[in-house]
Length: 221
Image: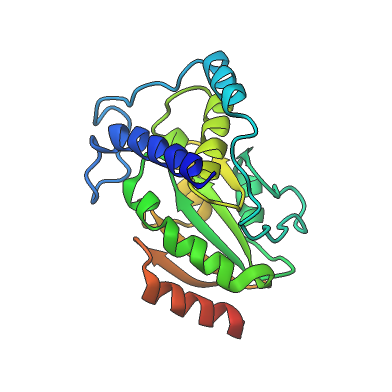
């Protein structure tokens, strides 16, 4: 079973590398037209057929169950869903537990590189904090919104992400000012208190030391 999961992760990572080779690490977000568009996603019928062929091969018996995140109305508990500006503001607002929000995209190699640290932080904190991803995949679209939602959910599952994601569907020129984002690059990780106050923003890749700081911050909030 472990070999199957490693094979899936490897295939997903190679697909991300094809896109990310066009993206310098210090230019993770460019305006449309500044680089060759990435390869489109496979047709949905092809993905359904491929998924049905591998159904039942993987097992989650050796993985910790995800702590539920659904106490805040509108936020998903798993997978990925589309989000307008109103829902994105809810995602960065108050909740019953502190929340760690990771802004990322499947085509962002640094985002993928930091995932082991985030998943370790998730296991360490357990149900004391809610995790949520905010996907910027539509800023470099590879298909329609429904295709990208499915792609983000599959990519996350294949890379061990057990928290849900929201797919940003508003244009960047609305998203950045609407969310008060001055750092227009990914990855970035926000720690949000129960009252909705932003306790910390990490602008760039997290490592083990940064995650230790975030864990201490969450425990003290």
